[in-house]
Amino acid sequence: MDNLVLIDKTVAFVKQTLKDAEGGHDWWHIHRVWNNARLIAQTEQADALTVELAALLHDIADSKFHNGDEEIGPQTAGSFLSSINVDAETIRHVQQIIRHISFKSGFDKKEFQSIELDIVQDADRLDAIGAIGIARAFSYGGFKGRELYNPEVAPNLNMTKAEYKASTAPTINHFYEKLLLLKDKMNTETSKQLAQQRHDFMLAYLEQFYSEC
Image (tube, one colour):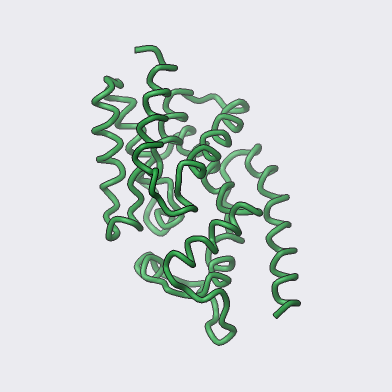
């Protein structure tokens, strides 16, 4: 099947599957990550189809919305891709990207590496910082009923993976526990350049936030 047809079918599947998703993990998050991934891929030697499919499917069943099940995303993506006759090797690659893309996967020993993973991971991380990242953080915090800010609850800068997944800390803490760390975790040169301005915007935002508090 033509790659453009595969992409179109995947877009339709993702839009339908995520039509009722939380605002920070909805179709428009996917759309931004997809665009970011295509932009970054222009400066890298990578398989374009794998990059696009992984970007589109990376949050098709995020574990945080499925009782922490980290295999439901790869399984859901694999079943769909099989149904539209994507080749087995590409399916396995996309599933591996989904397994290893998240920030929390960084707590584990790195068992998979590819330039396609680097690209999609950077694209996802870019959407977690800057103005969009701030909006997504507070959207998810509100979805989980978390405090905006509590000066009596200090950020935990030495969390284990289990502590990170179980955290109910105020949203402002998330800046220090994840968002401000992402600039230095970018894989590609293009992403590092794009991340700097977004990182600086978050620092300016926090300065304004605290001045208003």
